[in-house]
Length: 140
Image (tube, rainbow, N blue to C red):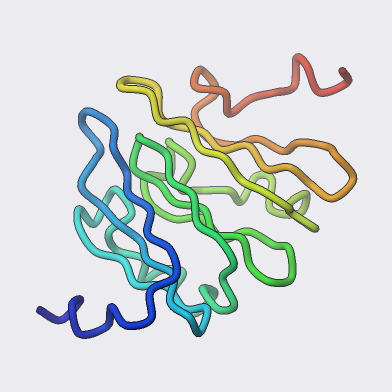
């Protein structure tokens, strides 16, 4: 297939695995680019952000059908279901010096990301009821 031909020198693969939103994968290649496939609305189509997916260090997924990639410069690019972590625009200016990203992937509650920054603080986005809103504990 067209995807199979692109899957060379793969460094990492992540998949969405929610009950209703599984079926998409993202692979990081040795050159830092990303190949995606599977359900388009759940992250299988990354064409909207493909030009930003360069020098990717790591990818994480939510069970709700979204992916987040940490770039070499410490920024984050996300795509997939916008309500379940695929849209990080509301916190984009805070996503600097990101060290790690973790996505929720419960059977019915996989819809948020948390990013750990270099200063030890945490930035969250995605579905509020799935952990996407951490404002109540932000000062702790």
